[in-house]
Image 1 (cartoon, rainbow, N blue to C red):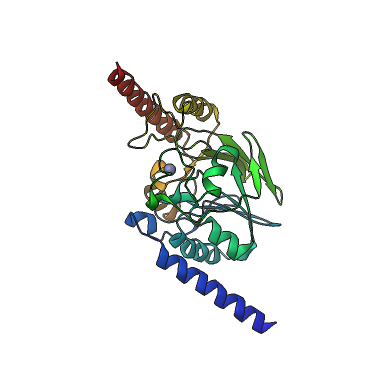
Image 2: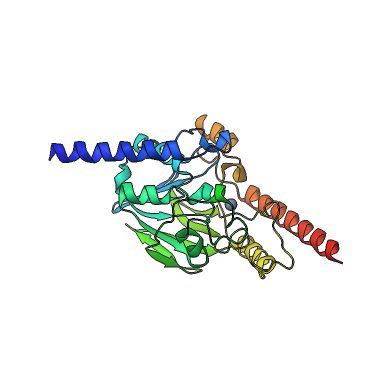
Amino acid sequence: MRLRRVVAGLALLVALATAVRLAAAPRPEWMRPFPPFRIAGNLYYVGSEDLASYLIATPDGLILINSSFEANVPLIRRSVEKLGFRFTDIKILLISHAHNDHCAGSALVKRLTGAKYFVMDADVPTVESGGKADFQYGAQEAMRFPSTHVDRVLHDGDTVWLGGSVLTAHLTAGHTRGTTTWTMDETDSGRVLHAVIVGSPNVNPGYRLVGNKAYPQMAEDYQHGFQVLNSLPCNLFLGAHGGYFGLTAKYARWQSGDRSAFIDTSGYQAYIADRERAFNAELKRQLTQRQ
Ligand SMILES: [Zn+2]
């Protein structure tokens, strides 16, 4: 029994060491460790300073949202353990969208934990091809990641259940074909809080919103995504990157005792409105350029 545990421990160390060696570190804040903490109810932050990962702790095991880069996996693991949970108790792995900064570590997380991987239908080809099927970055070697088998294909509006916790997958596409905004209700100090984890409403540099042969309905998808985001009730404003919702500033408030630091309905509305303005400006620019 003890030998088996030692062998399992060694395998884990080897896997983590390999991951750290292989991964590149594109931006310092993506790799910078961040203290794990309880956001509300059974929802915890376990990501780095900017690559957000979330843990939902239930009596039947853990749900992890976003594996990030392979090099982030040891950081996420340490954060999960610091909170007093077992990394190997992760039963379900979810992502915000199929870009390497949110999903490159998924194969490693699956290997280390045996978690089942649930991904939005339109992001499945990208995830399972290791990035090759991505409409924008498919040909770029640096954007690739280990191809990862998806265990359950999600559709818009699907729910994910574990141990009494329920998450809803909202398709908010455009940034990728299957960009997913996750919502869940948390009860904290007797109050129900609607949490929204924004998938990404951002138009990346080089994205062709108009006449894009690889993704013809891209602009319409963004527009639909903004409709959805504008319709979601939000108390706890969260997202795929810490920068979306001002993680570091809010955490400083949280640390000084303000347990409502992440309750920010107006911040959510302002962020979505700002991103929608940026999208509309870029669409207009591309439309006028074409004439
Ligand atoms: Zn992205």
